[in-house]
Structure formats: C-alpha cells, structure tokens
Length: 290
Image 1 (cartoon, rainbow, N blue to C red):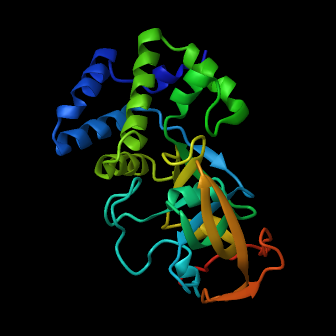
Image 2 (image 1 turned 30 degrees about the vertical axis):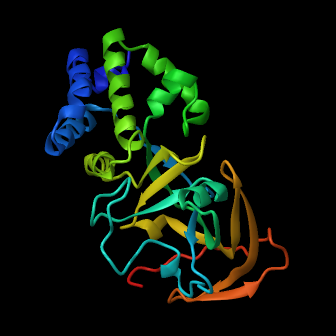
C-alpha cells in the first residue's frame, strides 16, 4: 500500500503542536517566526496545477480625473520597494488578485470612487502552481475545499486513512497556519507564513486564501518575478463604483482599454454599455526585458 499523508510527511507529535499553538500568543516576534517556520517545514504544502483560462481581478481606487496611461498603473508598484502586506514582507513583491470584481472592490475598501478594474488571465499553454492556505482544514470540516473541487473527496479519504493522533496533528498545523495568515491583522506574522511557503517550495507561484473582507470569496497573492511568463491582461475597465451594502456594488463602466502597446501604453475608448468589456485576444503580456 502507498504511504498515507502523515507517513510521507510526518507531522509534529500531537503534544508538540498543541504546546506550540498554546504558547504562541506569549512568544516574541522572533520566536513566533521560528514557530511558523517549524510548522511549515513539516507540513505537506499542497500545491495545485492551475491551467489556462482562469481569470482573476485587480482593482485600483482612483482620484478625481485620474486614469492610468500605462500597464504599470494596473499592476504592482514597480517604482518603490514593496511595503509590508498580508502575503509579503517588506521588499518581497507580490500582486494581489481576487476571484471576482466585487471581491476586488471590497478588498480595496471602495465606498464611492472612480476605479480601474483589470482582468488577468492565465494564458494558453501556460500554468502556475497555487498553494491554498487552510485547504485540508476546510475539507475536513465541510467536505469540500476552496480550490480542490471534485478532488476534495479523494483528499478527505486520504486524511481518514491516517493514524488518528497524526492526522489531528496535521489538521491542527493546517489550522494554525490558516489562523496566522487570515485570523489576525498582524501582517508581520501573516507575511512570514507566505514567505516560509515560498521558500520551502520555489515552484509555488501563488498562495490562495479566503478573503477577510468578502464572505466566501478567495484571493491570490502571486509572486511577480515570473508573473508575465504565465499571466496576461484580458480587459481593463474604468468607471465609478458605489458600495450598496454587505459587499454588493454598482459599477458603471465608462471607458475600456482597446489597445496596449509594447511599451505598456494604454489606448482608452468609450464603452457602449456600462457592463461591457473590451477583450484582448490574445491577452497582453510584457516581453522579457520590457
């Protein structure tokens, strides 16, 4: 018989992970980071192959009469070092994407503002590796993961095949890392979880995690070093967004990008309808060295 998950990736002894979790609030920051690294080192970091066609959104709230004129106004800051964020320590750049437009608006805390919404898509013949935070915990408690889809039943069976205390240790570790990542607002802690995962497995391109702002939504923190090797821009829309209530919005698209030059310059055009999109096929991607 093939080894179980816990045989292939032996977890910490149950008493050790319980002690680590119980003592975590009183640790110094250095001790907390060491505890996170210890948990990540033994934990089976699941990573999923995500192929072409998947689309995710990025929103920017804009000032009056501000309309980006270049792709650099749609992506991560390229002119300054990265600031501390949920999935990145200072100096470590990621781009944050959301599963749908209203999630992106909610994550930007938009209330009543002009916005630019960019649809990023994984291009044809390309793929990335995504590590979902708390996926095993979600499957164990609900029967279905955030991203695992129909594979959730198989993963559930794999967990059930493990020795009882070992699988409890594995799931407590998964819950601990999930709690460190989304259960608090201390980004020095959450970003260290992400950094530890990226360091453990450099093949991972992105970390997926449940939104703290939009119930049931998922966000993605994508490393930028090789971003344009897999991703492209499918559409860009400028308009006004207003928050109705509880994460629901009105969005009136006024302009759309109908051309992107090799140097990233954007050509804007008026939209016929506020809900329309100008689609770029193939999607725009920066070439190496640009």
